[in-house]
Amino acid sequence: MPSLILSLARGAAASPFKRPGRPDATLPADRPTRPAAAVAPGPLAAYRRICGFSDSGALPVTYPHVLAFPLAMRLMTRRRFPLPVTGLVHTWIEITAHHMPHPTDELELTVYADQLTPHRRGTEVTVVTEARLSRELVWESRSGYLSRHATRPGTPEPATAAPAGESVALPAVAEWRLPADLGRRYGAASGDRNPIHLYPLTARLFGFPRAIAHGMWTVARCLAEAPQPHLIHTVRADFKAPVLLPGTVTYASDGTGFQLRGGNRVHLTGTTARTAPEAARYGRA
Image (cartoon, rainbow, N blue to C red):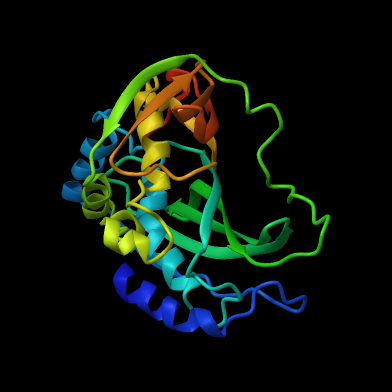
């Protein structure tokens, strides 16, 4: 698969020529696919370390999304993709593990764009990632990416917006001090070396005062902190505000819902559902 850096460069070059919000905009029918392959153990071990996952036998529920991210970037940086990749904001993600994949499973990965939705701040695209084992769908995610632009007054939130009631503060569980190099370390483990996560200088080019933590790291770190994370089979997470690096954040949870807070600011909210231990299935088991 092409490097993310090359994809980002291609996308940045094409971004000025795209006009988000056009009523006649259509999504490409492309479905970039990675042929079935086992997970490389070295990158997986590095990912587990940086996110806090133990080796439970199953893949971390977020990991297929990481594996398929280069495919998503290939799709979103193509000329036919209607939204500029520069400034595109990951706003939410939903993950469903129909079966718990095992690291030795040879997963086939596919990514496609599902719909464009008007948003009060611009236009949101839903990108779907699917993982198949021997042609059976075993894992899937849906992600929202927002392209900000001028909109008409009164444009409603899309149906994919976070459910109401998530502003209630959950009980604090742990406090994490995040180092300045967290984005570089996670980028090395995941392959996502977006400049906004690496250094203060590269982040400032995109309007951030300092580097920010990867949104998918914040989700994974919260899930890793939960009891028996290998039993989590569905996740909904909404990204509220970037986490500046270095920084200190509080992980809060009531067992089902979770939040990541910094002072009075909420960075992330989410919910999970679990499968019973006796019903958990790993790969072909």
